[in-house]
Amino acid sequence: MVPRQASFFPPPVLNPFVQQTRLGVARRIQIFFLGIILLPIRALLVAIILLLSWSLAAISTACCPEKLTHPITGWKRKITYPVLKFLGHAMFFSMGFVVTVKGKIATPLEAPIFVVAPHSTFFDGIACVAAGLPSIVSRNENVQVPLFGRILRALQPVLVSRVDPDSRKNTINEIIRRATSGGEWPQILVFPEGTCTNRSCLITFKPGAFIPGVPVQPILLRYPNKLDTVTWTWQGYTFIQLCVLTWCQPFTRVEVEFMPVQVPSDEERRDPVLFASTIRNVMAEALKIPVTDHTYEDCRLMISAGQLTLPMEAGLVEFTKISRKLKLDWDGIRKHLDEYAAIASSSKGGKIGIEEFAEYLKLPVSDVLRQLFALFDRNHDGSIDFREYVIGLAVLCNPANTEEIIQVAFKLFDVDEDGFITEEEFSTILQASLGVPDLDVSGLFKEIAQGDSVSYEEFKSFALKHPEYAKIFTTYLDLQTCHVFSLPKEVQATPSVVSNKVSPESHEDSTSDKKDD
Image 1 (tube, rainbow, N blue to C red):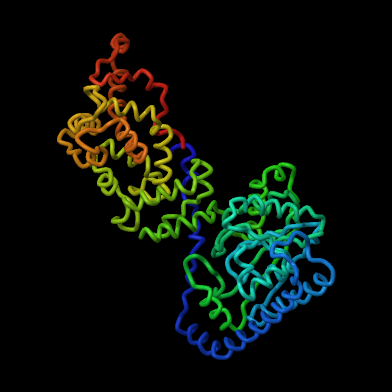
Image 2: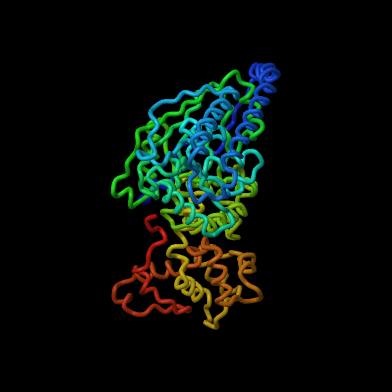
């Protein structure tokens, strides 16, 4: 095992972004008969409560701008908040929720920010009601939604715009301004995971709520029910289906636990990512569930994998971990997924064996190709998954795919030094590199060449787009180097006579493609 290689293995946790609730025949019959009675009654009660809440919210936000610059004060706040809080409790009660609240709610001066986890459903709004209707962070579009938008405005939300390039910075500044207002603004409630999971683990916390460096109060959510009708993930029941299933239950238990206030250390104030990680660990320990480095980008990758007819799990690479270790960005890793799909589309289970890998590279299976395949096959199971593919490409790209190495590789193939590679020159060197005397490389050559020969710019463009060839292109140089250094010292001192005049003298200081990753 290569040093630190173990850290790249996927964690032993279930996919946090899927939920499969199986209903037996008896359960379906129960839901049907209870639904006949409960569903219309609960739907009517929810509608009445929403209309009452909207009316009150409309009065309290009358003459107020959509994006508040000052907190709502006076009679509007003193009357509106207690009534809206009562209506919130009434609405969840009418939907059949039995809420158990544990712990003590911190005051705005003790903890200006609430952080809630795990976030698994739209019903998690019960935490907002239990906490006394603090402000929430919401998309700007949500306040335009009929009925719900007006109620949301009454909670004085921090609004995020998807079209404003400065929205992220402005949102963080607004959170800091409110969190350090000394209780002038309501407390802010944040779901730091940023997306819904199935509560099997805590994924990476986004640092937004921790940037102000103020004390936070963690809030834990639990749904201790035999039948899970609330979990709303990327793969599972829809919004309408969950509402119907939940409202057809006699009752649905939910526990809201207010944990002790967590005060950041000086180091955590300077490093919001560290503060977020500390709070996540505290909450995970209390929930007795693991943590992973999955994040919202994994959801996007998972959906993209499904669109490319790959198993959705192919996109679950723990984006936080590998982007931190390998300096990858979203666009780069999404491009890798397209490349991977091109190889894996015909393979079973979305995994790539050495045969598919060789076919993709248009090369025969050889010892050199097996060595290259081993760089990708991190767990040595004879196949490559998307995670291993991304890591392998990153290792090959750095430093094997630098322009200097590409220039060396081009000189290897340009035997007559005319600045162009012919198919015969290309075939001769690859045959020597791979140890296959009757190798047919016409298919690969046509991929690179625009005509009968390849210029340096064409070769460079191909090498940069296909880093998996870097090791194969430089294998001949490695063979020459090994040959020179295996000779007696007096022979080593003499310049090596090779037709392409590539000197191996600087190779000793180069970084191996099997570098620590």
